[in-house]
Image 1 (cartoon, rainbow over the protein chains, first blue to last red):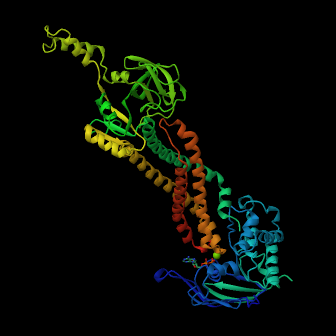
Image 2: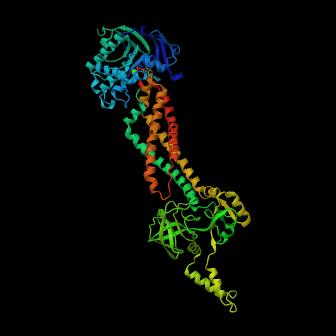
Length: 236
Length: 401
Ligand SMILES: Nc1ncnc2c1ncn2[C@@H]1O[C@H](COP(=O)(O)OP(=O)(O)O)[C@@H](O)[C@H]1O
Ligand SMILES: [Mg+2]
């Protein structure tokens, strides 16, 4: 994607209706150029996860506009027919909890995504192995998820989010269970990915260790975003 | 692409094999049930085949000799023998009873066969050991299903018999082993009263002035003699001549002799349609119930296994797995479970259940194929509930709060 990254304009999301309605997103404006890792910070309940879910085409927003690269995916309604293919081909997810597939070993948990996208088993595993190496869990490649530590699981989940080289990566508290050295390694890899593959990356975080690394930060409070220049210069 | 179903099964193989074995035992019972039905049909056909008869002549308006009692005079065969198209006739008696063998009782069908040789209607067509009956009295040919051996002594009513020959698969339609004895002995056995009854009857006859007439010496003796013989048999077996049509011959016997006559196919209808019809229905009901229970078990297990994977399914959906792939994963697991069950069931039915069942269990390959197809279909249908649940899973669940 010789893309323009992510653009979100006037995005709104209301859960439920009537008396019990919750306006989780009231007015979200965001722009993430390709090749950049942007931080999203806000208190609990401010709408961070809701925003990632909308952008990840997992839940439907109420109004607004979202553009991935050249493609308008949402403009008061979905503009893409096959949301699952959109997620598979365009979006990498890294969740708060790793949620690995318990019956696949570490390598295949990662390799499953390129396989689903139609790549050969050999090529898929090759890509998985490279990422596992970069994330320092390659020595557990044949282990089952239940046999590795929480930190290792999180790194495998990160590899899974990156393996299809999606133009957009959405990460929800990716470094929470990691020590500072490993957390910084993850951010380094995300920055590398961003630069190499022109990826636009949003990282939701509370993590003091990594906040200083962002060039640009969005704050969200009660469903409204505010932009702020970060102190970091990324990883050069 | 890797097989998600296969990996999941390998991961939780203990659970799979365990439930597969449980299901297998159920399938084994189902296959044995079908086998018992087939065995009953086969027993019935074997009985008809082994009798060597083309036509059965029985007491008027009865379904004899297998499905109802029938008795006709033991000289009726003479008239039947002279009918056109009749090649051979033979009297026959059947009496289902307990026979004393050493210190145990065996339920058997004692068959009285006329003097003659192999090939005579009613005679066992072949022996697996020993020889045919050659003497007029107290020799028996018995089926090995009753646990008899050559030289064994049997007690039928008051008389002792020596087993001189052994047959295989000579059984009644109820599966009881047959014992062949000379017709005269069999007629006597059917009629025989105990000593007290005989003595009492003699006394009553002698006391009856109608029989005990001083001016007719010997009358009372001949009356008593006629009272203590049995001039009846249960049926006359008829073989027809080459080139004659069984239905035609049967019809002419029916018309001229005023007896009831059945051809081979009519007899088969009586055996299958009347004698074992109730048992067959009972077995069919069992088959239906067992199929429903199996389906419920497969459905429940697959549903439970799927509910245990809700989060993984949400993740699979989130990362773009197609519904088709997820449905295939669940259905393949259901089929795999069914296959394990079928293999276990087939093995238990063949090696475990069939040999220990007292009745003949005939496991027909075609029934196995049908059973296999039924298992697969049941598994596919049972997985639908689980698939519907899986397709409802919201990928948002994978992201959490
Ligand atoms: N499925 C839902 N239904 C109703 N309300 C929800 C739902 N998910 C989140 N919310 C509400 O929306 C607001 C934003 O939640 P969320 O996006 O999870 O916040 P954050 O991730 O920043 O903690 C909260 O008030 C939350 O209670
Ligand atoms: Mg959250």
